[in-house]
Length: 388
Image (tube, rainbow, N blue to C red; front, top):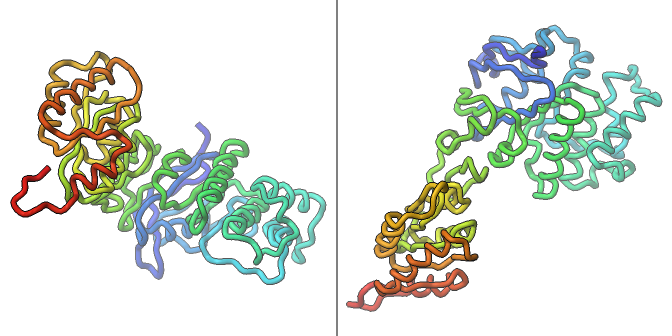
């Protein structure tokens, strides 16, 4: 295996001799996308500033291609590494093209004179981030999403091997978040650029990163492929989640409500339960569902929402024992929602739950009757009346 492009050797980073993040020890290879995850104040920005040479290590070292970062002259370091931090940039009276051209400073003379190859590099950088049409516009007239693309283009003009970004999607709308992350991912794959960035979106990091670094209270809690380190337990511990769960299978965070209403049983499968379960959870109902195969998307959504699940292995048809368990659980609920869509064998088996629930006198609602269900179960009780 090729030597790592970046090596962190028992690094301790901080300010004025005071440690903010310590015992950082891992290697990063060319072309990898690295995401730093953790709550505010965890030490992510301090670590990035140390990796970029903005602040010296308190102890340990950062090696770029085997050479200590402290041994690089400023201009040589700028050819190896470019940085996009979170500070607001407001250059006066600069066109986008002029602003991006500032990134050529490691390659030009003292006056910043642009040669043909420098102008080609500026054009290439703007085209790479899909901002070529912005070249003649004033930088100050751009939207936040457009500015982030231009800042990225300026960094690419340095022709670095490593790109460091601090929260590159902060303040961006969904469209520009997706565009920026897609561009960064493409740079890793097509140009072999190494990208290291801090992110707050766990689901986004899980989708784009090759490696994730979990940081809390100045300590690295985990380093590895997102598929390995981003477990529900790890993410909950990282962010102190109480009413939310990260689903490794769905690569998303499911929000749990604090249920104040009775338990509702939902029948379905093959994705038909998920929107119903989410809607009921937001309404404040406790949840139960079944019988679901353990590789069904509904199973993972129900699990993340904290539902009581009657599940079955997908290797065989639903057993009579599991059906009996589901019927018994449905009998403990205040209502049932029929979310079954389709005619697969296991969905037909779940129809028996509905039949038996009706015999027990429990109200059954269709999936498009959730508002009716809410008004039925959440209506004020008359004095002396029994619960529905």
